[in-house]
Length: 143
Picture 1 (tube, rainbow, N blue to C red):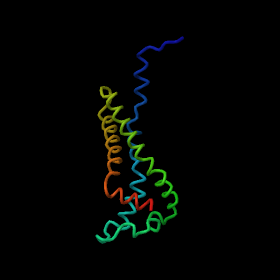
Picture 2 (cartoon, rainbow, N blue to C red):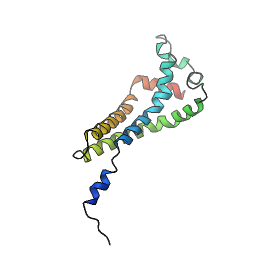
Picture 3 (cartoon, rainbow, N blue to C red):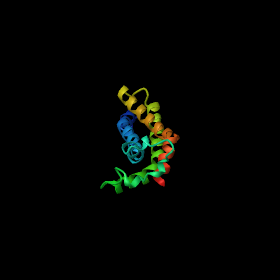
Picture 4 (tube, rainbow, N blue to C red):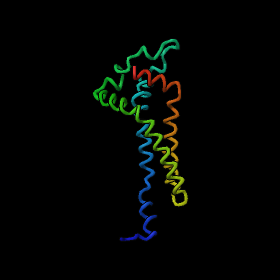
């Protein structure tokens, strides 16, 4: 039976910290909402519609970027991403806070800022779902 000295443990654990990866995953969790819902809403000028007109009067799938060659891929990304993105964003936020707290004494300022940005972006992604605009865009997409 081999016993490893305690000096080897911090070096191995230190190499596993990847704050850039946490920020990348947090950014990827926003893609279905930004590219699939908010981008068509603003690019096609639907945000400038008359006050009494509902968003449901517009056909989302006949607008850019859904009417391009990548429309099918975009639809798939949004259909898969919208239900899973809040869980991914929440997981990234919790993981980033956990890692920043656990390694607070050994993290560089850059690593701490990346973990904080990943946590903030994950929380902001979930918080955006509580807005009336998000509710309207999600209902528009699923309609």
